[in-house]
Amino acid sequence: MKITVLGCGALGQLWLTALYRQGHEVQGWLRVPQPWCSVNVQETNGQVFNELLTANDPDFLARSDLLLVTLKAWQVSTAVKNLAAQLPAASPVLLIHNGMGTLEELRTLQQPLLIGMTTHAARRDGNLIIHVANGITHIGPANAAAQEYSFLADTLHAALPDVAWHDEMGSASWKKLAVNCVVNPLTALYDCPNGALREHPQEVEAICNEVAAVMQREGHHSSPDDLLFYVWQVVDSTAANISSMLQDVRARRHTEIDYITGYLLNRARAHGISVPENARLYELIKRKENEYERISAGLS
Ligand code: KPL
Image 1: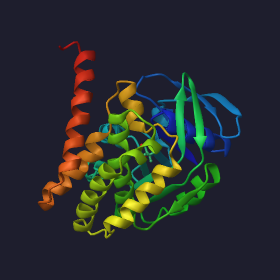
Image 2 (image 1 turned 90 degrees about the vertical axis):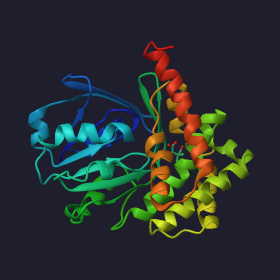
Image 3 (image 1 turned 120 degrees about the vertical axis):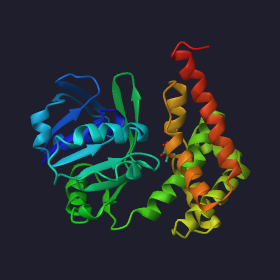
Image 4 (image 1 turned 30 degrees about the horizontal axis):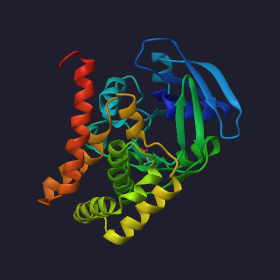
């Protein structure tokens, strides 16, 4: 297949490496207008893959069979809308990011739209992307046109296993949102690895209870206890991880809070449900983010 990967950060480089190795024709798409992208990945077995790949080639994009989007949630819709007119109308667009809300922003996209979530862990160490742990990528359709693209799960699985297809992604997306509502803001505020949240059980439980209430009204049933059990499982299995939000805060980057807790707050408001613990965490993260963004913009 001919595949354009939009976003060449840690996850984008993992996919570029895996797809290239599998014999697919790949290119990266970057914000900087340069015709190549450097991929430098240390795989889980310690082997390093280093290659200069094509980037930002509009002809390649116009013949791509798939646009794989690995940007941060807040970058997705603007970037995809900018490229959509150059991508064939029948070529699917697969979004893999934390949080929710981008599907609503891309409602009018004519291409088949798919959503994915992954538990692969990767981190940047200087110029090297370290693939810390293998995981599972769950993908599924986000609009009617995407329903016939289940074969993509096999194609992607052959390159970077495991990949599983789901005809319905709503419940899985909400469960992942619950994990991110708990882990991301709390680890960013306490400046701790995921596993240290075992020291804050009351906050974890309060967040889960609020998410379960909203999730139920959205039509995805999960009891607060089941959701809490699931969240603790993820906390324990990623205990040594530095969450993506803590990495963003430490690097003074814009966070995905608007698409994680912010999305929950929007849906809670729409249903008239009060979510005070999540609202408090949203405010604290926004305050932190605004502080360093104001400083880097030269405002006092
Ligand atoms: O998705 C994650 C993130 O860090 O963004 C979790 C699952 C919390 C793993 O760290």
